[in-house]
Amino acid sequence: MSNHRLVVLGSINADHVVYTKRFPQAGETIFGTKYQIAYGGKGANQAVAAARLGAKVDFIGCIGDDSIGQEMKTAFEKDNINTQHIFKISQEMTGIAMIQVTEQAENSIVICAGANAHLLPERLTECQSTIQNADALLMQLETPLETIIQATNIAFESGVKVILNPAPARTLPDELLEKLYMITPNETEAELLTGIKVTDEQSAQQAAQVFHQKGIEYVLITLGSKGVYCSHQNQGEIIKGFKVNAIDTTAAGDTFNGALLTALLEQKPMPEAITFAHAAAALSVTKKGAQSSIPSREDVMNFLQSQ
Image (cartoon, rainbow, N blue to C red; front, side, top):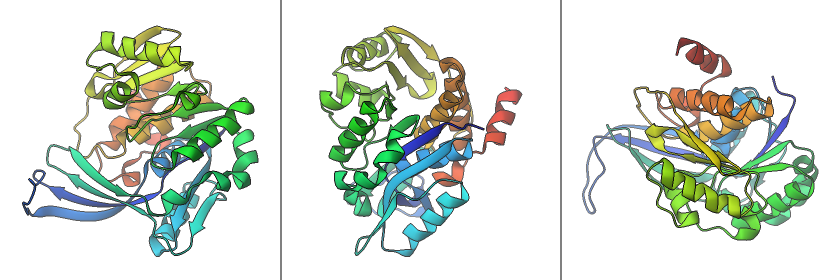
């Protein structure tokens, strides 16, 4: 187990998931095959993944004044996440995501921020020492950008490594990017942030160089089934993932990020940490739902031994 502290700042959503043969066209009504409510939100998924895989996690986020928010907070506590900085916002609902999953395991998602929009910079006064005493701060982009910038500044000034998973895709200011230790975009997010269309190892290398020029030490571009392009000081390589039968890819990227940080905080070398994260993400796509699909450490170790 790791004694190193990971702070995750991010979103908490209740995922309303409908399974369907295909996506409907505009104006079309189709029948779903199954419906479920699952616990999600990129921040929450990454916090749960890291905690289940053995990291000590403090989570900064907001829930609404509703029963599902309270249920999710209780679930985080069962996963040994410190929920001291999960703020309950009165007269607001917990964030929601409406997710359609097809038989091909593709998903389309609409998010309504709800309480997540209230994770504003002034909330960080209460969490400042938690961030300053962390070993790493992991964030995504489902909460207000000004808070992400402020948290980055607090961490950076205290020598805490800041890792950003820049999802969902949006443009970001250089004042944020230059303070990051690591960025973990997918191809779409990398293209939006660098202007380079990422299709193969060569274009991934070019995109990574743009990030390095902005001051980011480690760049990990996830390339779907091809694996992850990992670049450090302009030296890069693709680290391949595992082939599994995907049922639902929701939270696979979040599981990857949470697992990666867990392994790095245990001082594992980067290629080994990425392989550990690949294994966790591979296991997550073999089950339905977001947090419900995130594996335990034992599951991941067993999977790695079987490969």
